[in-house]
Image (cartoon, rainbow, N blue to C red; front, side):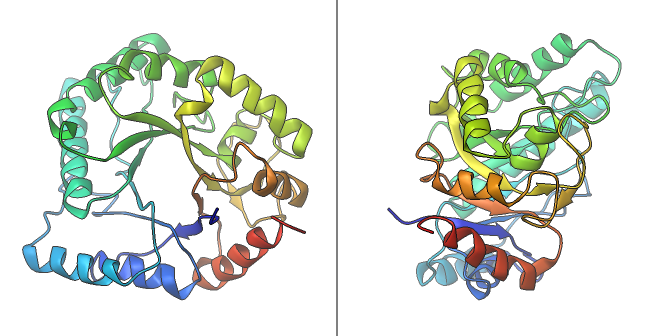
Length: 282
């Protein structure tokens, strides 16, 4: 079984460049922004851009490609104007993912700004269910990214993720992307094999391992339970190298695509991809 390890690569100058950048660092899977992640106005691909994408993809080893949606989107927003803007932007993101024939759309669930957490989760569920027509003839899966629990963000506990999955799974192609830094900051230990076993058992109880499709691979600058989302290079943070060795060897995680979002850029990712793969059989 091929181990899929890559990074979030730049699509500057055209989406096809994310594929080329992935190939340059030795990745066989990538994550990308399909549009500017800090603007409400979404990009619409021309036929020429799509042709470029598929021409490069045809000769690329990159598989299981994942999009990361805009940072502005809050599918649980209590303000109606911003909720409608978020829903429109999310729908446009799905349309771009479909046009590129991506495997996954990774998204932050949202934030409870003024309302209760449960009300926020219900808004998120309602927002997601509205996307159903866009996914009827699509192979795209929507992956909720587990958060660190900073501020008012929801989705940092497996029970909250399970709440959303339970109410959408029969209607939409749903799943979860675990970010190692985020779940560690949220209070889930992943520093060795025993810790991973306990955390995955907890995930299975509240969400179900069948819904775990991908991993963001980041060490954490701050300690377990800090609720601070600050990524660190692999082995240079509070999770430590043993946690990533266990992740790469764990039978329940081996087959999942893994995407680096560590600081350092292309040169660092090239080395970290080699490092992570070296853990498999060492």
